[in-house]
Image (cartoon, rainbow over all chains, first blue to last red; front, side):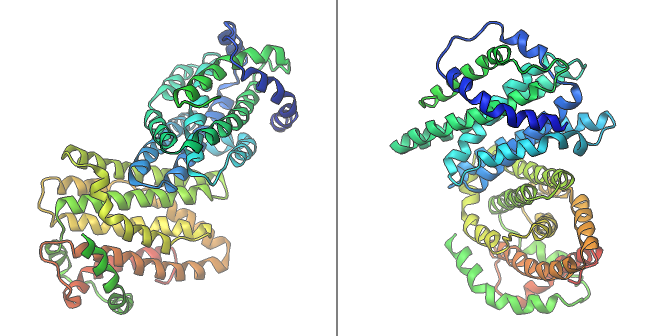
Length: 243
Length: 243
């Protein structure tokens, strides 16, 4: 499992340029779906990754909730936190059903995900809210698609769990209201979103080296991210932010 | 509603001495239940208070989860956080059912509860865990008893919500394991617990001035707290801590 982190670190530099290039508005590549399926990890790795990522989305949402300036924002963020926690718990339950220890299944992924969470940590409340909005958006979509390639009967249920409500519409409203109330917030969030998506896609990409047919071929992997990025851009657009 | 905070502040000094006295192991006063019922607030105040307190228990548990040193502790605390959030959401749902705005129902109580939460804030992880354990213990028991006096058909359901699982057994195990592993932790937690219970009972007491028959008579109010304190002492005993 050590190789997972090593390759994650190695890929970081190689990845940042093509990602940045992809952030320009290219058309979505039609081969995406097939390629992503081919790169799916085993069910054990899959469960460990999604379970821990949902726990971290929960943590990010609770942190934003604790820093919220008013009760309405607190409600929105505690709801988002609770929904991410419920997803985490659904995956933990599945891990236990298989007679596995959740800690040992998640542990291989904690160092790199913790490092990612540290990188996107911010003391600014509205940036925390953007974290919740974008991170859950990117990973729910990515892992739902990746499930198609996981050779296990649980894959379908995993997709359903991930497709479940995230409370993100209300989080988006919170962002829009704050952007509308202060002309400087939009620019700041646009910058923050760009940083966030790069780091998040790096985590998503690192999941792909866990497959039985891992590839270091960027040319092969790049199309996989086109749809994720297109969705991310639509999400930023909806907030009136430049991706 | 302003008077609630004013009287809370006024009572603080008057209360601290009898509370400290009560922390000695007196027998439980048999009149407790009756007296507490007589001092119950209206359903609206009751819902605002329990809803916001559960949100703060959730926040305390998430904070402890974020600071947890390992995945097993993280699991225990995220479960406790989720259960407190579910209780909060049950009360919010009831507030909404009544056509009321959750924010306006909770708002009168946020300044003093926020102030309380700040007072019991700590950078020490195991003290955060003790917060979760004791605060949820004290308030779940207190508000469940107080419900008996609330003149509303929802009172019975509120009691059931509060009696629901809190994940506190696992939190207690976490505390016991840490106390066993380091001889200095027990003394530190015993001190912290004493501080915590004083501040928590102050919040509980402040709920009593919301009733239709508020009283400033300490002689009348003191027995109300005997059972709460006895339970608190048993809880500390179970951890091998001196209350």
